[in-house]
Length: 78
Image (cartoon, rainbow, N blue to C red; front, side, top):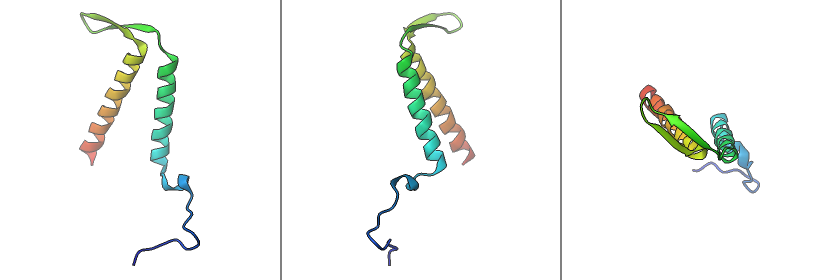
């Protein structure tokens, strides 16, 4: 038999997330806010070439590389 909550089954929506999920949500929200606040152009120097790009593209790329690196580290540990 399945376990059910008696009395309507109204469980707190926010209680279903653990602390790790809340930290991830906060990091994503702050990152999006930071990206939207920084829209100027930036020069990025890769050893020899210098690239000019909007700051939001640089920040999204940096965030994506960081997430990918974290995923790789977690997958390797697991």
